[in-house]
Image (cartoon, rainbow, N blue to C red; front, side):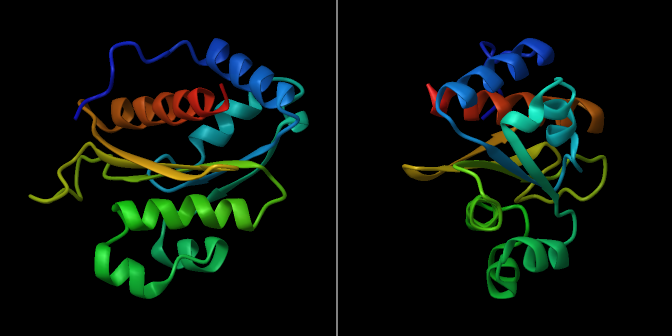
Length: 166
């Protein structure tokens, strides 16, 4: 599946809307990022006053970091691989567990240009969102080069959280 054309890509406006929604809910968020390497946290903290609603970001690029910082089990990683639904759900849950927040989002994927496989081609990204109503996840196949995949991942992850807050 590719990204929806209705996806909000005006990053400052998207982050502003997300900030308003989190504040309106009296909530804070955390991120757990693999393929984006902290870009989601960076987008959030570009907005002055983000400490009101953004608590922390976990950059868990390696499997060891996923295990040490988020509690993702080695068995889950060995069975499903880092780019998988069970792992992104565990990452989102781990961020929620390891931070004093009500919401978290997680991403893991293959940004390219290397690292793809027949089962998980370049552009495959798993998204996870955790909050008061549990964990949801989604997989997209995003087009473009490494920069385009990472940029679209940031936008989709933040849009997804905004949707869940509304």
